[in-house]
Image (cartoon, rainbow, N blue to C red; front, side, top):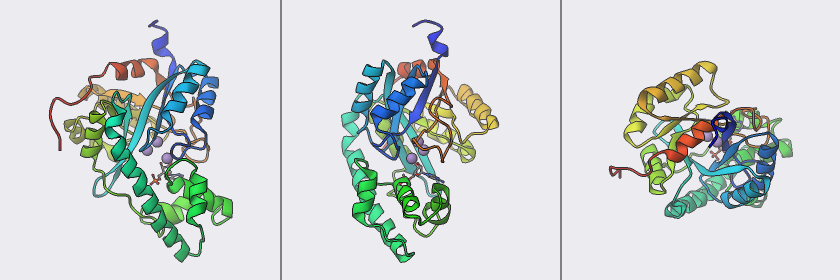
Length: 283
Ligand code: AMP
Ligand code: MN
Ligand code: MN
Ligand code: MN
């Protein structure tokens, strides 16, 4: 690899219609190629369904595409997202991902019931059609509420109804961070703490003992001070640094457009070289 390449921009956090992104994997890769990126990772929520299409699009647009996934996990109080890069054995976690998918349908039914009680009538068929091939999530629901004129924009849909503590919120089944990390290791993916934000500071050392390998220091939710802090922590603890736009195809939320928030290719080169699996066992 040329030394210049190590400086080229990559975006390691993107969503497609395989979860709650607005663009198909193919459209997403076309846009990333147009934005002059040297590589991207597709990191849909709890699924690897979009990967094959993205890899194929990567070949036709001559853009390197890294398979990835973003797992949601929950402690008592907080939702913690874990990115898993480049799983060498994705089939080892397909059953768990399938169960997470089924659980999203059950949870959505409960959310629709709650919305009905609030006077918003959305049917199962409507949300399923909105979600397309993806398992339904809150962002699909928010988009539908805006289309219906129930709420002026996505932000209000969340702040009034869908965010935690709001009346239509239904929590998801608990996948704790230890289990999420061990699942990623089972697939021989590289587990990275996604957008740790303000509350992540106290978590990192604990996650490190569970087999965490990196921190997503560069993210639209992070202030420059947080980026510096997490870069420094990563260096101190021997963790990889990653970053990306968390692009969902619509610019209303986390306004980072594709290509706007990047890290240099050397971060990806380090991910590819990272050791896989665990040398100790976690339940
Ligand atoms: P879920 O995985 O179904 O719980 O939905 C969470 C998703 O909703 C996140 O991945 C974001 O894409 C989206 N989301 C969360 N908070 C907001 C917000 N305030 N505005 C817009 N989208 C949001
Ligand atoms: Mn999302
Ligand atoms: Mn996330
Ligand atoms: Mn994300």
